[in-house]
Amino acid sequence: GAGVSQTPSNKVTEKGKYVELRCDPISGHTALYWYRQSLGQGPEFLIYFQGTGAADDSGLPNDRFFAVRPEGSVSTLKIQRTERGDSAVYLCASSPSSGYGYTFGSGTRLTVV
Amino acid sequence: AQSVTQPDIHITVSEGASLELRCNYSYGATPYLFWYVQSPGQGLQLLLKYFSGDTLVQGIKGFEAEFKRSQSSFNLRKPSVHWSDAAEYFCAVGGGRDDKIIFGKGTRLHILP
Image 1 (spheres, one colour):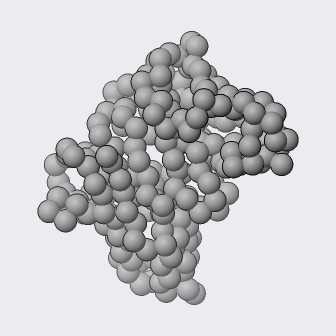
Image 2 (cartoon, rainbow over the protein chains, first blue to last red):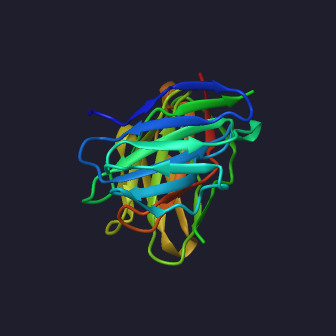
C-alpha cells in the first residue's frame, strides 16, 4: 500500500481482556517495528521483525505481550490480560531492506477501562 | 546502551523568530540520528536524518540539523518559524540499517503570533 496501515484506529477494552492490533506495512518493506507511546512520552521500542522472524524483542514489557508476522508482511501485536497501564498509542513502522526509510503508521489508541 | 536526551520539554518562540531544539545522545559507535515531528492527532513524520558525511543535514519544511560528535549533539534549527511548525519534535538515535531506533521524550514547540 501507499503507507503503513494500522487497524483499528481506536480500541477500548475491559481490564483482563485480550486484544489484537494489526499493522499492514508498505509493500516490499522487509523490516517492521512496533512502538508504544504513552501520553507525554516519546515512542518506546517494543519489537522489530526482519522478514518473518523477530530480530529484537527486547522492548516487550512482559510475557503478556506477543507479536507475529507469519508471512513477512502483516504483523499482529497481541496483548493478553490487559491492564490499565497498557493504555497508550501503539505505533507500527516499516523500512525497506535497502536502508533507512522508517515510515510510521497513524497508530492504534488502546484504552483499557 | 543507546539513549537520547531532549533537555527542553517546552519551547515557545514568536512567529518569524529562529529556532533551535537541543538533542544529546549516548551511543557506543557511530550513530544514525533522526528528527521526527508529530502534530496533534497525526503520525510521526521524518524531518531529516544523518548517517555519515556532511555534518550539516538539510531536511523538509526548511529544517536543518548539525551533528557534533565532540558534543554528542544533534540540534535542530530553523531560521524563521511559521505558526504551522507548532508540534512535538522527537530526536532519535539508531545503530545501523534496519536497526531499532530509540526516541527522546520530545520537545513541544509553541508559536506566538
